[in-house]
Length: 245
Image (cartoon, rainbow, N blue to C red):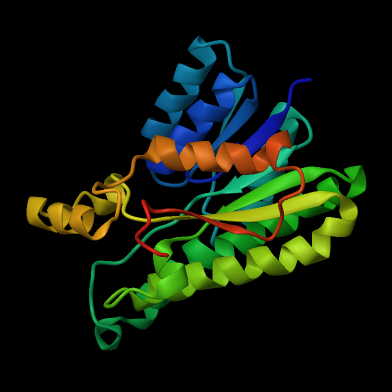
């Protein structure tokens, strides 16, 4: 049976790795992006060239109307959604909370937390009607522990965890599972600003002795969506090499 997934923030990094991972298992994939349109288009064409039915959806998920349209466009292109992976996110430069402006705070909350709410609000009714579906949100180790000089990002990602747990209770009776993946230090564009010394320090702090890869996070996401995890809901799976224990 062919299954369909919408992956937000899928133009690069963890989102792109998730898109490739689902495609490898024969899923039809809706690739969402906001600003990185060319990268998302290239990924969509890559998936199609490999025989995957893939659709490109562009939207600012911090806008409720655009988020709702993105979900509807994914449904129109692929059919109903069996899974939604809420991966889209951003972070500010490392800075003190007192140096954070109102607009910076709203930008992070709008993308990292509001966007998850708006996307799922649009996607859930159809899943409830079908009494089936799986949702995976992406948080961060900082959503669990808090990160010094990353207060807005930490707060938004902690909110994602709370939303995930609440929805797991709310949607469980409808046969819908909701779980969260909390990555640690992963080699993506979001960590590209780090110096070699910073990367070495992160690797040293990680019990497994290295930073993770987007593909390793994608494997966790794919597991939580799959039948192997059919009795797992409301959980936060840390993919962090043991940094948060």
